[in-house]
Image 1 (cartoon, rainbow, N blue to C red):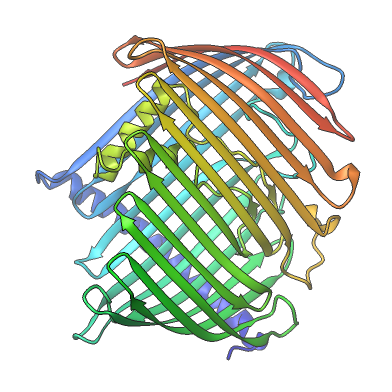
Image 2 (image 1 turned 90 degrees about the vertical axis):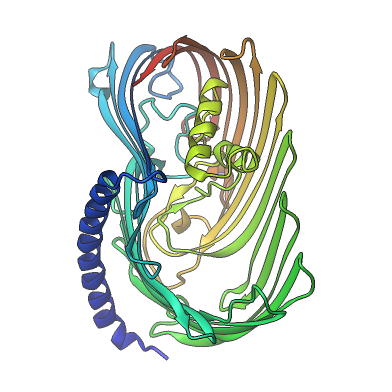
Length: 517
């Protein structure tokens, strides 16, 4: 087992090695992209869609205060989306730069960046790969601070958070006996104006199995070592070894058991070892229905993960429930069950190719005025490892002219690192409970124009009545095309925020024009 005195050296080596791999992978991705663009093969497909938009908002409470202050806000956005498949690189990248100008309060003028990107490069034929992910967006700092139904408005309780992750891995076979995969990963996250979200996560893992595709009885073995270094907190580690067997009861049902050992320093300085064991089941009665569940005894109690999805020609259902340690600085941002995720699943039969399906889903959401990135629960920034229970339930009903989406999200968070002394929301609350609900109705007026009405509810609670906030909002939007590649939209919004310190209500009118090229 690993000891604390070796952790610092291992961490420094892992960080240095991961950063070196990051530079190498970036060069690989660039060279692979050039290769993909130059290789004139029928399977190659790259698509670049630049766009610009202008949005005008008139609000009666631009600072989200009890004493209202009206203003007119002009937002100009320039962005582009790149998607690609074929060759040696597959992936996508979304980037947008938005500038906001306030008519009366020039001190609130700002620039906002948005990035969401992911790519996989095949650097060795069928064996060596590099996964790369990047994101940059605004996130809520405190669950008990001011909340807003419109992220673009001036809000001191939001911070720009950027994250970059790289994961090189190799996979192959050991003759006819087993498959293997070895992976290294490094992720760094930084926040603007605060160190609460600054964390470096590095990991190494090794996996073996006998590939049970054609056999009734299967086995697997895993070894992992992870290090999390919070800038505002401390560095911690977790090492696990585990072996399991699984049995194919039928073509639709597979069950399994596992056992192992785990060592971590989240509860005891220097670390302690504990045995682990678990059970799991996967059931796929049809290609439209999937259910997976596992429960495992860990050092903090029981962890579990339950996931269910089902789709019909006119509906899609999704449900997840999990309890586990999170070393991400941004809590409560799980995307399973989002509007984008729902429709991506629903259109799987109509468009099997994920890249073309992505474009189809985004066009559908744009025409119906549905935000693909809406977050039901705003979450908060944590400065240490967190024990998180997350629940998400979603359903979409798709008709000839009407589309209804219902989304629920619940989150319970408590400190997992019992030795840290950092200051964040969990410094003053033993447990933070958050839940949110969103109901959206989109009605097609014509084949390309629609109205959308969305009602949302979000509540956060701590240990005391002063740690309670509630945000309620309703938004109505009309969307219509101006031309082949341009749309216009207009709408109204009303929101109410209940808080012991900064309650407010806000009313707004808005209109926007978007042109893609």
